Length: 471
Image 1 (cartoon, rainbow, N blue to C red):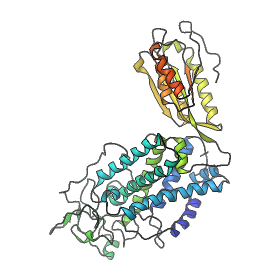
Image 2: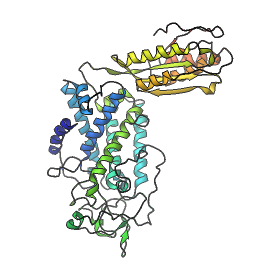
Image 3: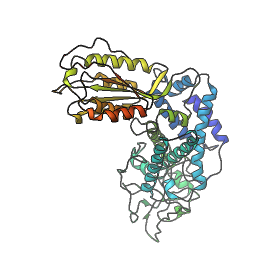
Image 4: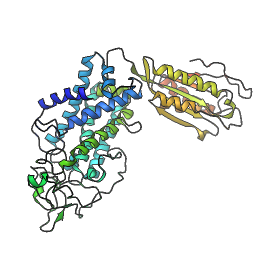
């Protein structure tokens, strides 16, 4: 990413504005080139997430290429699309800057004042609103979604700048933050001291006098002057609550003196400046996880079409595109399919191999297997063609003592998981054992304009070998 990043860094400096020291700086600071900003984190985080997204859908070739080289290949000579992609990162960062400008007094936005659980649930709530809105989003909603993503990423990144997570765990990330219902960490009680006094003068900070000022193995975050959660005051003693500790934070002069802020690399501005690089690395990786994790990532939750619109992952150079449709395979895995299953595996894997290199890459692949009894049914969804091929190659058969099978239940599941205007392929050699579901299946097929394609004849009881499966 070196060439791409150098270009953006030059632009970052031009956009730097005055701000209160609440977090990572909004943009790069002239003369303080080791300090990483929210914009820097977003460039790395969104860039790497986009690379993961394109790789998952076989839209770039990673062999012998860095992420930067692969994305340059994706955009090719289409400089307009690449410019829109970069401008979008700036737009998301500007939504983060709104919080610093307009909500500086709200501690939980910045994960200050030990408001860690509140910050966690704030991100969870925003994330849920994103996912809910995405289900009916129109073009007019794209900017709202982009704004909420910026707000989510801001608080996630602040977690690593303003809490003691990095002091405890280094540059590892807390994957559950902002995503899962339960945060598997204990936060200090209001009555518990979390820091020792440490000097507040620049020379002492530069000499490392505040490096080991935390005294807790639980999560805590610094209190900051001017916010809606006040630091508990102590008239005596050497320990108390940690402060944020930047030079414009007057709580750093009250027990426990000093602070734990690490959003900048300069000792004059951040008492834990020595941990800035680790905080940056953790914030970057947490942003990548939040956006592009295969299970919990926002790209996965929003869907491919909407993700490409929000993040401007587009190119007019003739590259493959992700189409807004799905491909579903519903496979009978009862014992009567023993002579057919190898043919099914060959046909389906060959089909997926062909489609993943075509100009019509689907948004997702769906695999449903049904058996007898009905509760043995399984369903899996992936955007990764190679993962689907792996699932298909491992299909096996067993059970099913009688001829009819629960094919309509399987078809209903596949249709429910499918996008509109998409094909569903059903592989069974038996008539349905659940004819009472026929009306429900017909309704969903018509409602979503799904084409159901049966690939074997009803011949259970008369074993046959599948000669060729037509797609």
